[in-house]
Length: 328
Ligand code: TXA
Ligand code: MG
Image (cartoon, rainbow, N blue to C red; front, top):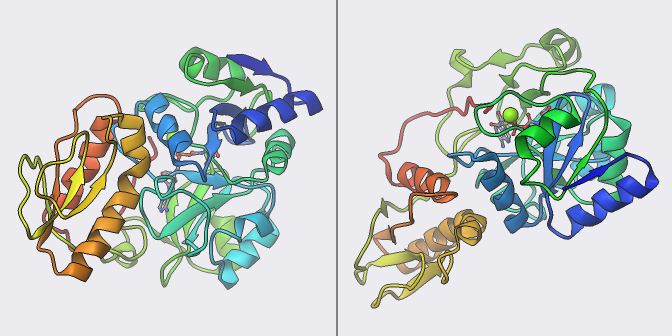
């Protein structure tokens, strides 16, 4: 692991590592983030592996400025106002993803929305500018642990898992960014954080909170997880003619429509391809009038836990509403 200082040399080195698919932890005004190129699904899968996350929670994409952020999402009037007044700063906006966004499907956990933010820490902004990429960064702690606010915390927790840590000093805000969902009819506060609700409401009017009647959404809308429209059958050891196959390792004989998550059984590769695979098979199955997606077993270790969690959700009876309320 390299410990870098945020001068020109350090920032350039950190940017080079990020651009080549490595993980770099860096400080923001809120907490330290575990950064990866958001457009590189393997780098993003490595973030989930390093955190030991048992689930694929969608990650926030970090940018040097609002114009860069709004190339990946569609801002409305409220987003424009908030970006103008509160960016750079500890505010994350969830907005509809643009069709031509370069961000990997895994970064947004397969959702039709993306969370974007422009941090105010000068070193973090310089790093985003030097990469010219969206940088996916969850808090740089192992899953279930508290978020780190110094470089030393990160080294203790994830030193073995990252190529470098950019020492940006102590985080001045110390709590994560406020997450505001602007993708639906009403703004919804998904996570309180560094920007107060009062500051937001002063600019855009009333904001609903998770648990309010207004925050209940239908699947496929707002913050609901992407679920294939096709039923999913788990643990497939055989495949029938009316099924599309989500393979892992050697594909089963007899399948016509196949997406192989990883022919060599590599869990990082499988995680990187999971959401693309589900979408692709779902579209193919609908086009060919197939009955369901049959998913081969994936080992229950490493990223296999998160992959299986996602597959079980895809296979479960569809809830009428669901909200994401996690900040692990
Ligand atoms: O201050 C912060 O936001 C820090 C620094 C590093 O920027 N990052 C951070 O990331 O706290 P993370 O991954 O620990 O938390 C991201 C939160 C989660 O609660 C996640 O569910 C939510 O943002 N989120 C991300 N994308 C979303 C989306 N498309 N829809 C709904 N919620 C989303
Ligand atoms: Mg976190």
